[in-house]
Amino acid sequence: MFSIEWLHNGAVVDTETSLLQTVEEVIETARLRRVSLSIRLRGRAPDSYRLKDASGNVIGVYSIDGKIDAHQS
Image 1: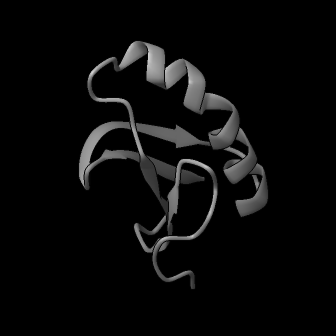
Image 2: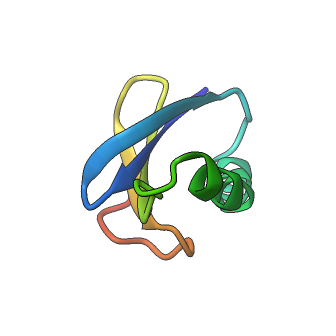
Image 3: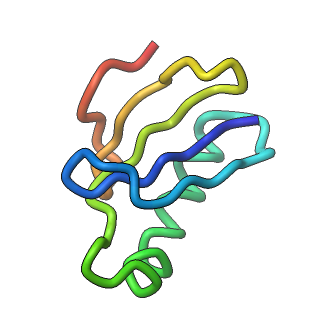
């Protein structure tokens, strides 16, 4: 299980939970979700997202295009 915190200028604008099994699957799903989130969160469209594992440990912070912005453990 993973948590996705959608960020706009570093502030959390939405949070989702994913039951997918791998980090790669979650990242791919996040890339596909960015368009619908941009429509739903007009004016606060996410520019990045923070990915956490089930323990709450940060896996990485990714820009909306999928490039890593911060550390990845």
